Length: 265
Image 1 (cartoon, one colour):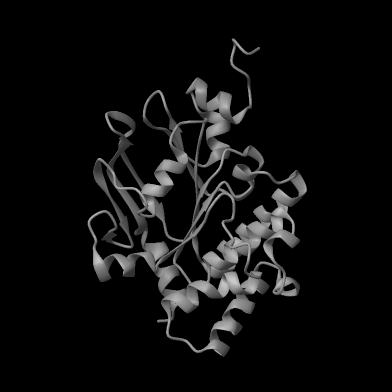
Image 2 (tube, rainbow, N blue to C red; image 1 turned 180 degrees about the horizontal axis):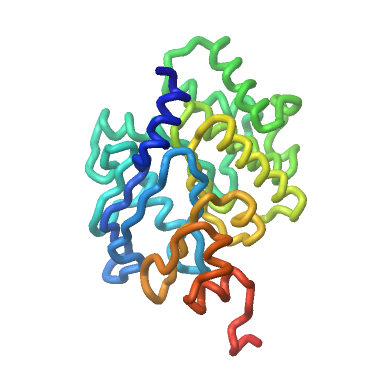
């Protein structure tokens, strides 16, 4: 069975590709997120949303192993990234790619050099193979004409696309994107949303995305969880369109309908 068929079969079986179990996160004595439990299904675009300061990016950083939780576990394709060490941890990290909010491209390197870097660091492929793969990844995001450009010479939207190409360099099963639409105008943001949907549908990659942009949420998300800093956890989960139209939680409806607080109004 080829990789695409395996992914489809796993998705059909309902087996989650990510499972967060009892995750508690915070700093010193402060608890930001308390005993979170949720799954991410294979092949879906899963969005983490909520108000400012609720812990969206903190949760993502725990899911990719940058932060160690106070308690709980994060299973990536069945393996616990919290407890894994050495080669086992590296094997888990090879299954994920990350695009940070700023793009985090190396300014002194061309787009192609940025995308080639993970391949040079983590594979034994020869230069010609690495170069070809790098060009193919940039073509996937529509940047095949800009391989020799430095990040400063292209737009913010193009920098985000290049960062996604680099995140895809090692053919990960899961792509984590932190605020991909931040700082982009509506047209550029819509184009990036369309790219994410196309990659998810054509490549079968699972996306985990942090965002609070309503237009993007409705355009890309198969399913969302909403975090609330007052509850220190998840207050809503499901299709964002259904949550918008049927949720009985006043804060959930306020978020999706973009209504101001009474004090602010």
